[in-house]
Amino acid sequence: LEGALDRFAQFFIAPLLNPNGAAREVNAVNNEHTKNLQDDNWRMWQLRKHLANPEHPFHKFSTGNLETLDKQDTLDYLWAFYQQYYGSASNMRLVVVGQEPVPQLQEWVQQYFAAVPAKSPFVPQPANVPLWAETGIKVLVQPIADVQKLLLVWELPPLLKKYRAMVPQFVRYIMAGQFEGSLYHHLKEQNWVEGIDLDVNNIRGFSFLDVEIFLTEEGVKHADDVTRAWFQYLRLVQEQGLKCKIWKRQLEMEQLSFRFQQKPKLEDFVSDTATDMQTLEAADILGSPKNFKCDEQLLRTVFASITPSSMLQFIVSSVPYSLDSHEPIYGTSYSKHRLNASLLMEWSVAKPTADMALPGDNSYVPKVFTVFFNPENKHEISRLHTPAGLVAWHQPSQYFADPKLVFTCLVTYPHLRTNITATLLLSIYAALLNDLLEAPLYPASEAGMSGGYDATGITLQLLVSGYTDPSSKVLMVLLMAAKRSLFTKA
Image (cartoon, rainbow, N blue to C red):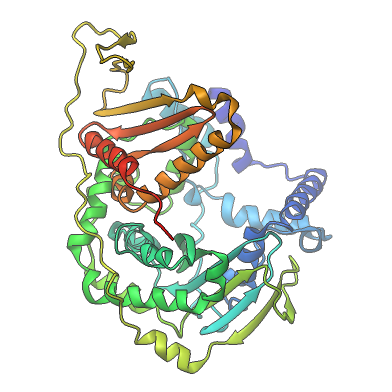
């Protein structure tokens, strides 16, 4: 470890940055870029940047290729970049993990990193301009893959330094959750969507909301209806859901996750911790949510910024559109149009439907955390006494000392060995069961539980894992789902 620290420190003290090495890295970056040219995720990311305000830093191409990097003065720019961002101890956050005592690690750090220049830290200036060049627009996009999705994007107030309010977690929980009465549940009942993914991008000085709705073939025809449903549910949240009572449910999940977190890989721990030290307060670096507090005013401000007129609506589909533009770096074909004023007004006054509801209390949150210790400290697998026809095995474990379990039930159908059709039907049956369980077990997944069915060959598997306390409730939901009829008469 000592030798590694010595070598690592030299990158910040006296980097070589020789021309041959720079040229190789330019080619490596270009190869990565070339690999991504047919990736729809990269193409959509760059299209967002292309449509951003040219005066905003987000508009810049962020990865690079030969055209942008293979210049005669590339090495000069590289040295300038190093001096601005890497050549100062004030910009650095260092995390060292080793088996040596802390005083020894501290001595090595002081010995090998003392020569890193201590200049004034670089502080990026806020953009002070709108993120998007235009809003209230519809963008039709031709993807590479056969996909169809609706992407809704908004600029939000800067949230990076307000992480203790857990705004991204709250927005994701209430707007993209899969509980009964959720937006997702409403849209799925219409056979319009297959899933919703929501992300709040927090970058220094600005934030924006990405809502990715995966559409069915029928949903593509109703993209504007799906957008209307978003604003209908948003109205419900704005009127009734921006309460600390609901926010505290997410805090409870954060506390539970922190209390019973698994030990991370060391390489992930040092990397994540060094990154967090750039933005988090010292008391929050190790992930404890004890200082997190609800801020209803901030929630109202964030949700008030999610309006039809401030939105970018992307419809990504293999349906042949008449497209008249190309993004210059990835070549993505697209067409941009102003959203109809009457449609924007309709969305802005949309009211929730009768089947829409806010999330209720989560009955799957564990309350009992007793760990049952084996007095003889045995870990052998033992066969339990069970009725005829049923074989049960149990293996106690005290290794992690957590109130958790893994329960697996395997049902074998030997007569399916020679019946391929029946084997396929068993797989379909398991998939239908899991689809039926999606909404009822979503609160369980929020509480760190998982449960479902899986079919492999001639075996149907029932699986429950997570905290011991609510596991019997999850198991009962799984068993009751198997008893329900999955088919209705036409």
